Amino acid sequence: MECPPSGAERINSFALVCYLPGALGAFVDRLRAELVTTCVARSHVTVLPPRELAASLTGESLAKRQIANCVPEYLPFRVDLGSVDVFPETKVIYLGLDSGCDRLQSMHDVLNANSLSFDEPFLYHPHVTLAQGLDAAQVTEAAELADARWNEFRHSRSFQVDTLTFVQNTASNRWIDLVEYELGTMVAVRR
Image 1: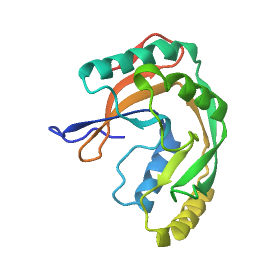
Image 2: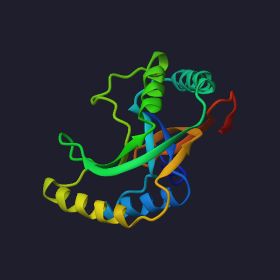
Image 3: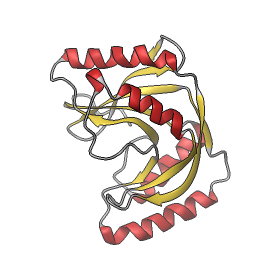
Image 4: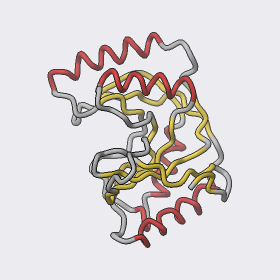
């Protein structure tokens, strides 16, 4: 997710993500841009998929407070990325997770309540999106390209989940980082 140009109109769509760091994140960012040239979002694992909040600043404040209250309960943990796959219903191409799913699922289940509660259209399935919104005819070829590129990647496919970032979308579909939370602490790292 990336900061939008100044003056971008924020919309009532919020999410909680964990960005992929370092060489892994840079590689996945380049792969995403190769598969969908208009993709500008940073590579990430979503903890809470996009959702609307109560239609006031109070809704955003309550959501931030709820996250801040839950984050100290979770210590940093490792995620290992797996293979390229495609969700059959949506044709989204993604990287699966070989480890860390249980911890992400737990965080999702605890946080998807109260001010952050949302009736999500799909069952939560932790993953890293590589491409979405492709024409059906492009999906197989794009998935094969993603698989070939992923097989060429020679660095670590693991990363530590130690921070979560609360983000907001804009009318131009560019996400703004609002607050970064450090797992296992009461501290909001960046606002």
